[in-house]
Every structure is written in C-alpha cells, then in structure tokens.
Image (cartoon, rainbow, N blue to C red; front, top):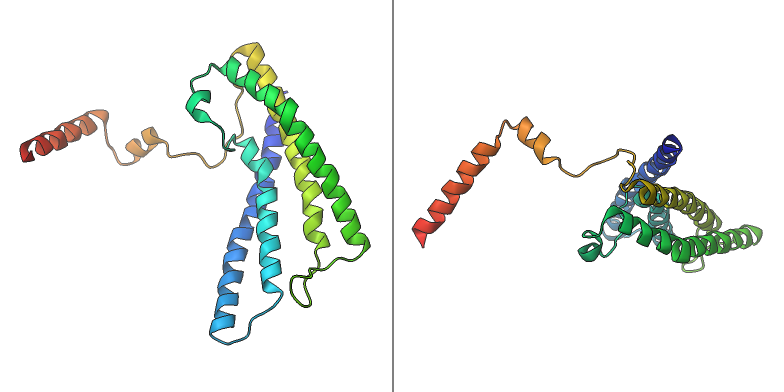
Length: 208
C-alpha cells in the first residue's frame, strides 16, 4: 500500500515539476511583450490572453503537487498542537465532507466546459483574434482528476495514521533547509554557535 501511495506522490510531483517550467516560459514571454510594446511599439493583442491561460494552467496543475507535499494553507496555530490521530481524524472529516464533493464537482463541470469549448471551437473574445480557449479549459478536468487521485491518497494516509498513531512517509522532493546538514557543510558545531551567541549577548550588554 505504501508503495502505491508513494507512486501517486511521484506522479503528482512529476506533473507539478513539468508544469513549473511555465514560470520560466511566462517570464520570458512577459519580458518579450514588454520590450516589443514599449521599445518597438509593436504590441501583440493575443499576448494577454495567452499569459493568463499559462498562469491559470500553472496554478491548476500545481494543485495535486502541493497536496502531495502537504503544502496547502491550514490553521497551523492550533493544528500543530494536535496529536497525529486527532490531526488525521480532522483531515479525514474535511476530505470527505468538503474536498471530495468539491473536486468531483470541479472535474465534472470542467469536463462539460471543455466539451462545449471544443464543440464550438471557442476562442477568446477579450481581444481581437483571440487565441483558442479549448486547450486551456481541457486542463480543468485533468487538474481535477489529479487532485482527486491525490486526495484519495491523503484519505488513505489519514486512515493509516488513525490506525498506527503516526503519519506515513511521503515522497521526497525539494525540502526545507536542513540545519544539521548545513552545519556539517560549513564545519560548525553546536559549541561554536553557543560561544558566538554568548559573545553577541555580552557585546549587546556592554553597549547598554
């Protein structure tokens, strides 16, 4: 079971990492459009639509990735003090009551939006000669399905935590700064930090 959970984590991570390159593409495109508009007086009417769709795609396709890393915003002020079992019970209830119905509705509505958009060959009407919208709307049900898949993984994790009293492991990706590894890299010991702290405290006291 744990292997299956980590496999889906890996899928969500890979999808998120692939679509994260849209940040680079979007940056280049915005820079190019600004230079083209103000330096060469040659704006492109379709650029705004394309940039908006690229950002929307990035936002939606990062949802499952963020969920797999437990990175979505929550009220950690209280949540962090709960025991793992209480955290899992709360998460499980919220997944069942809110998450699953909401994401199912997103995927179903997105499927209908995308189908209608493909049927009428929809193009953006914000600007003249707007780009096609149907590829962007197709992202909605895809993102919904990936979120739903990752959501089921999180539900299983909640059940495992309720049974075992601790959270199962997650897939590795970009971690926060590991202080211990950082200290090893620069050859700093806890004793050195304590001496530096005492020295700084003493200096501050001398200047008062």
